[in-house]
Amino acid sequence: MFMRLLHNSIRKKFALLFLLSALPGILFVSFTSISYRNSAIDEAKQDLVGFANQLADAQERTTFNTKLNLENLAKIPEVRQGNALACEKLFATMLKVNPLYGALNLVDLHGNTVASSGPLAAANFGQSKQFKDALLSKAFATGEYNFGLATTQPTMTFACPVFGEMGEVAGVLLSSVLLESYGRQFDLRRFPPDSFVTVCDQNGLRLFRYPALDTAPLGAEIHPALLEAARAAPEGVTERAGDNGANVIAFKQLRLSPDAPPYMYIFAGTPKASLYALAQQGMLRDIAILLATIGVTLTFGWFLGGKAVVRKLEELAENSFRIGVGDYSAHVEVDSNIQEVDTVAQSFNAMVGILQQQKTYRQDIERVVALQAERFQNMSELSQELLYSCLDRNGEFLMDWLSGAELPLTGYSRIELMDMGNLRNLVVEEDKHLYYKHVADLQPGMKGDCALRLRKKDGDILWVRTITQCIAPLESPYRRRIYSVLCDLTKQQLTEAPQPQGGKGTERGA
Image (tube, rainbow, N blue to C red; front, side):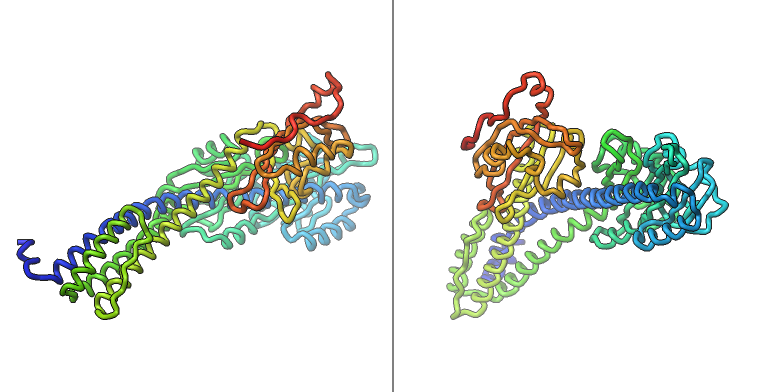
């Protein structure tokens, strides 16, 4: 029956042969589209992790600035003396300069309001966590959910003790930082529909959610499984069932110091179904383009016949096989004497161009994966004490990645070290020639290993061993990137008291 339909019909045979010749391309696009789909999902997950880290970095900077502001404010004589009128003027000025602050209050040792930036003269903060912690530790402290006491907006609260003339605690400064900026940052990112960002305190009570949801009110506990996952690791990605199906959620802990417990958790999530739908859009688009191209060529192929068409059929079949085995240099010569054959040839070449674009797109993804693999492989070969990398930018190494015990080793926080741009400012003058020889002046393929002395933030001298490797980054082989680790040698140097000198020197990598 089927063969009878094709009998004595060059047009039918031509159409069938062309459809069969396009089959390898269809299979190839289908296979690569599935790969793109998985890559798109992984990329979306990384985007959630990046957004959670972005919010965490912003909150850490805000917390650091709030600590400095409250500590400086606590040293002002009017605040230490409890001058209510002067304090309220200071607080009003602070709120104008820092619009992120929701409120500023000075309370006595019983939590009663002495001065306030708002109408809270009769308010008592004696039972708030930040007040109790500040009195107990005599240091800067964070609070927990207390929506509605000092402000009607979602906030994170902080406290700082005020010391009297004899060094005794004379009062406590209380401040709250508005969390509404998280929503604005969320809107700037292109997340799938029904995505959200949530912030909770150390007890798992929801401080903020954007977009707001009636089933997730502020002050209520977040899902126990989600809180347990966030407490188990500093950051990561987890999945949890929600009202609209399974959600993929990235989380991040915030701490006042590396050894302190988390005082806040940040979550960024999106429905898993939305991730799949977003990833499938590209796959459907590719298939639609391919099918449209095939449809055009089949339409013209139906009206072709004769010897010239048969010869073109053979040529098309041969080139289609080449495409199926991955040879995208295949090309069909157009025949200007036959308009229909010319149209089919142009359509075929257009399909080859589409497949070539898909191949290029896949290679770009593989290149990004290779870059990440290269970076983590280089880092994994180093120690785990203090890792950092620097990228050569216009002839100067600038730090672009840092991890490890930077605060215990140097006394500087990660933000401070990144702001310095490099570690060379910590190297004592007598050892800087070693630093340049074994670190900063290394060329791609060279390694360095030497002992250096660093001057810590408190002025103490720290002996370290620096192990460095310089490579040419894949993204720019004409530039340099170093990966280095600092190992603490202070105890060893105090025991052996050696003179600072180079270690293994530099040598070309294998």
